Length: 353
Image (cartoon, rainbow, N blue to C red; front, side):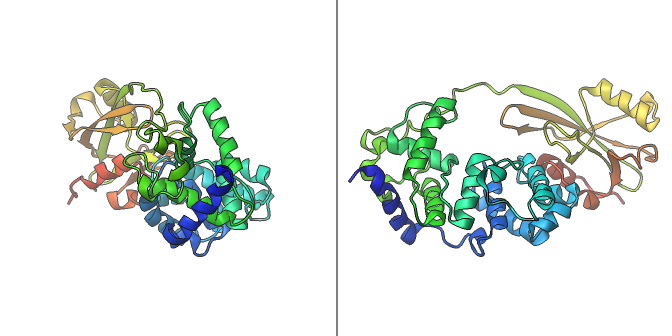
């Protein structure tokens, strides 16, 4: 019997005894809950996702509720989980389902994969887990398992290697027990076939794994060619009025932290002063910033060096009612969708009497 024919049976036997069967999205395993979990698990580990998932489904228990929620509600509930485009896409996809698919996630693969933030692998995972339909998946854990099993050289994120991985994923996907198989191969990658210190002795696939046989588990999958992260600088303004309210601004609809609420930013001290003179009616001689501890926030594609500057101002009426600006007490700000480093910064501010 070819090793491709025994791949799924061995994996499923392992899953029955050692797989994860009590994840919150498995009980009950509805299309909506599977979809939420798959999106949250993109680039995020299970242990991190679980509390966010529980809070999210408590706040938005159904697709219809999510579709009618405000963007601020969704982003605030998501805040801290990162990659905020996932939250925006969830809401947009829910609205599309209400408008075009009878308030349900479509069972047609092409329709499902075309919704915002879903794509080929996530659509396959939803249909396999929620409806027992035969579709392959290829998330990061699955890529690692298949790359090692077949001894595939090259960076898995490249077009050519990913194309080969999809062929292997299709080859190994069985005809039955699709929900269990999909969870099993993700579990294997997360618990045994880890990037560092894989537990090959316990792996049900080790006997036919090329990487294990050839001593290549430390080398495979090959990493993306290294590139030095560029560094950018910004100034964040911590502006507070006489009652202790903070000035927050909604970020643009595209780019980093899109549509989240954040502190005003400036490229340099002079730009910060000009903005206060123009928007707050202050005189340049009245502006005396207090420096707060700087910090660095690392994104996937660059490092952001942040210099926070605090300033107490007497009036806050000029922009109080603007659509993209709000004066809020720190406790009120916490209810909005805030970038994690901004939330942490606000939490460190002393209360004003």
